[in-house]
Length: 266
Image 1 (cartoon, helix red, strand yellow):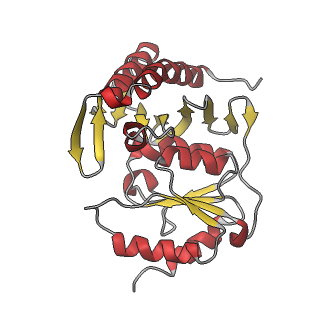
Image 2 (tube, helix red, strand yellow):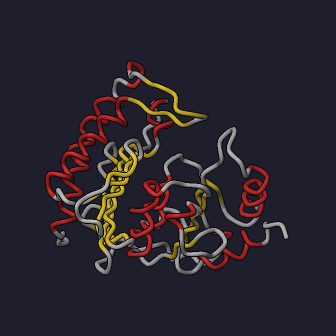
Image 3 (cartoon, helix red, strand yellow):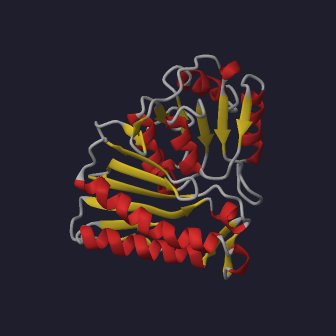
């Protein structure tokens, strides 16, 4: 069994406890009280309850850490150098429609760098985790990105901008370019799991613009610890701030970067 640090153990235990409520509520999805926050952006009692559990459990173990929460926003901690970045339910739209593809994502940030990440899919009981310098794991199996080196043999994941969000023309140009050279594109509706799947070698790459820190913080570390590369779509390295993400295995990330660069105007 792979050795887990104390901080990763805390994250895993918190994810397991929050997942119990999500699984229960998913079984009764039609009865959930749901309020609308914005175009294709929903919050349910399931989100709020899971976040409450995660915040309680993480604060109990590390009371001085701050938080960056999808629903609760930023919460300062006594320790100004460390904070949790938490998405209690990534794939909310899937969840509310009874589609069994969603997860909990937790990252631990130290001095602006993510040092540990956990992504848990409770329906499949798949726990993706990584700690900086110690590799990435799915449950207790070490992860490695895919070894495929040709885009023609590759499956690439993406996230499609919803109605009302800017950037549709640019995104459609990107998708057309990728569709023309790869074996297939997948859009499953959870950026955190998309990144985890790149780390596990299920996808060769993933790109999506305008994501939030809680969508990607844990996944970026897990991909990198599995031997992959993650940058912004234009090649920059400030993904947490911009929300633009391009992840790929070590053989194809550069090809995807060059391909997407050709779609930019000017």
